[in-house]
Structure formats: structure tokens, C-alpha cells
Image (cartoon, rainbow, N blue to C red; front, side, top):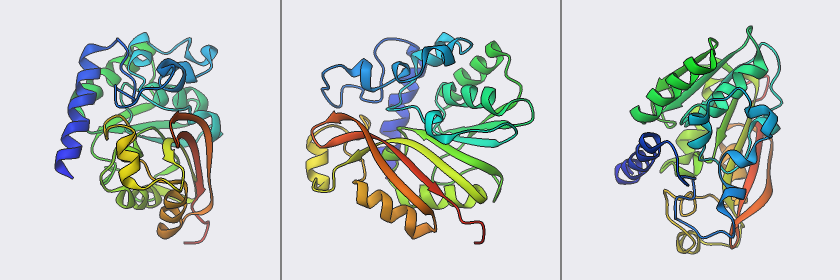
Length: 248
């Protein structure tokens, strides 16, 4: 597990220091027809990016737009797993407004430095970026209303721990809105690995049923995994939704 985590950390540290180029989550790990169309800032509505620093957009390494499904509301507290350069935290902060708050968690110092600089450039005061792993979140129990993530859960070597931690930090009734790469159910882990690397968001992807089972195992209800676009043969960008029950 430590080897995988270090590979991921090195890959994203490099993206942060380069701040540019074609650094997408795919990262050369797969060969889509047009990587720009299925990874990165191109998946956001251009008008939402007007006030987001270019540096945050250039290191947007995601496979979707979790804000499009999270349905954030004024005053909510949001947590972004693997917040990278801060694009989803900054967009969340705008949506929840001054009475809300947006947290980001990332394990890469270079990304944290970049995200904090981007927040300062954007004039965002209702944000905080924390160092930590998504398997052991540095937030209190029941401290956020919504958890979002953009093509990061698939990078974890211990996804059950991630889902357990997400459940823990959510308030009762809190919800999940995640963009991730998800495999079709018929693909074996070996077949997924043939389609791309772990740091390229392919080899570590769960299947649709594995995702649903994992969410249910830690207590989530109203779970749904919907494919949005293909990123490799049998592999898709997907929207993952779930809710923590009011009574736990």
C-alpha cells in the first residue's frame, strides 16, 4: 500500500510543481481519443471558472464535476477528498457562501502550497486545506454536510477505509457526491490493470457493484453509481451518490 501511495504522491507533486502541460488524472496511464475532453477543467462549465485562478485549473486532474451532482446549498460545510490545487474547494466555497465552509484534504505538500496560494488569489476566506490521507481524515466526527471528490478514491489502496472515514465525518443525513473512474462489472482486477496504471486512475478502479457494496457495507443508503463517459474500454467516468441515514 505504501508503494502505491508514494507513486501517487510523486505523480501529483510533479503536477503541482509543473502547473501546466497536459497533466490529467489519466497521466499517460491510458490512451483515450481526447484526454482533454474526459479529464481536467474541460469538464466544468466555463462560467463557473471565471474567478478560479488559472493555476488551479491547470492542475485539475479529475474525471468529472462533483459539484454538478452535490447540489450544494448556502451555509453547508463541504469536504473535498484529494483537493489538489483547490479547484473544487474554491468552487464549493462560492456555492455555500459566507455562511458555509469548504475543506480540502490532500497528502501532497506541493499541492497544499499551491491550493493555499490559489485561495489567496481568489480572495476565498471560507476555505481550509488540511494535510492528511483520505483513509484517515483529519476532521472530527459529524463535522461536514457534504463530501465530494474528483477522481481520487480510485487512487486509494484501501477504499473501504476511505468510505468508512467519509461516513464518519458526515453529519446524519449528510450526503456524498463523488466523481470517479468505475469499471464495468464484468472486468476483473487484472483486466482493469491491463487498461492503465494505478496513478492513471485505471488499475485501482472499483467496479460499479463493488462501489455499491462498499458504500452499503459502511452504512450508506440511497446509493447510486451512474456512468457518464468512457475513459477506456469497459472503464467510465462516473457519478457516485449516497446518503448517511438520519438515525445511525
